[in-house]
Image (cartoon, rainbow, N blue to C red):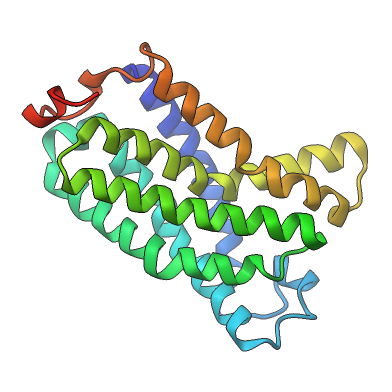
Length: 221
């Protein structure tokens, strides 16, 4: 991806990260009646779900913020240890903390069976794409690593796109929140994956020279 496009996306990400941080701060100190939890009171007494919710909310902010280091051309080229360290932390959080927590939450998602299937697929795909990104990095398959990171982070961004789609559907079509939720449960991540696949397959936006130089990377793809 060209540098100007990368920096533009990072600026957009910064804007939405601030919005997500404001939402997250509503739960500090720990509150069970704030924001989203106002419509989850029938589940808040279920200890595994309640723990999963707070774990997912607080740890996902780190994964979202990790995009600033994982896709920054400057850090990727000049501060490789930072890129690797943050990447390892992100993988550990997604695979062993936030990912499993999101799976538990998906089982009781708003919107009934369609939403629960969507969020279950999202959580499993999030962990799978992240595991593949880690696997290809360890194998020094850096082109494939970048591609799987695009997919993984596209799913990470569903936290933002889901809210954007929900606001849009309610504003334009005056849907009830729960009706909108059945739609945005899928819209939150499926278009993201399609965009990621387009970027991966577009030679202009997914050039190899965006990667730090690795001899092994030159042999991949």
